[in-house]
Length: 424
Image (cartoon, rainbow, N blue to C red; front, top):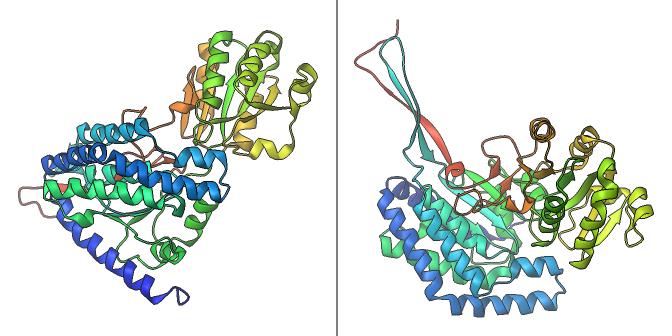
């Protein structure tokens, strides 16, 4: 703590104090007011799309000068369609049922007490993310919808883009008469700010949500002095069962790997049953290679297909985030489940199968946050789940799991109503 510069401490203390004050106001705000703020923010994003794209050009140019990996550049890049999607995501969040104040359970005790469990905001949320500037809008929108104030710390590589997007979110707050400090962005790329957010702001911040690579997640989980909602890397698997329809298998594997290789829901490992190898492999391999994907196969795959290169043991534990996939031939569903349990990160797994018993076995026995049957792992996304947006896929088991949307950013309190009861 002593190593953190005084000016950073003063900056962060001010941000924390304002966030806590805004949280008290936001928690009492009407759903209609938060709805108005979100709609105004969505409009502002579209109205300022040229400024957002101009800021993004600065970030892209700086990233290219640093030789950032193609997967990170893809995450960083904004275009008109992505700005449109960002605005639409905020609007979808606005249209969701308001989670704050929902009564999730109610019961009557024999003594006449009526007990309710009621959703409440978490309070002040700190969100640390890396290259995706759209997280600025997604996170701000979800926190506002759920009655939380948020302190955003975007990656240095997306600083200009995120700052411009943040301005649009604040414009929405202003129009709705909500405190501007409900959505704050740390206005510096100094890493000391992250250190102080994690270890020095327990009086202000209720929970930290990291969104980024393995190193970021590890640092947050190690240094944070408040609870963390986080995920490990997206080491996602697709398993082609012997009963799989060949066309479904080809199309789902191709989409799961190649639709966008740089997202956490992209498949990194393909498991295929030995019993369908002769009938299914050629179509799947042809589709992947034609799309530009490198195949790293086990000895059986390399024997069968000269286009594959030999996999090494580290590949089974690697989140490539690029056009590479590891392939293993398995004897049966049990070996597939064993492989995923050993090497997976608990994020997302898919089975391609026409046998309903095999599908049920896979879905029941695996314990990842998201499990799919005959569908691409790229559906691991809050928007695709009908949540409007998400601020990450949580792979832990405490509080939130899977896509973290507005509802997952609430806690609850118990409200007990009586008629004068006293306890004997």
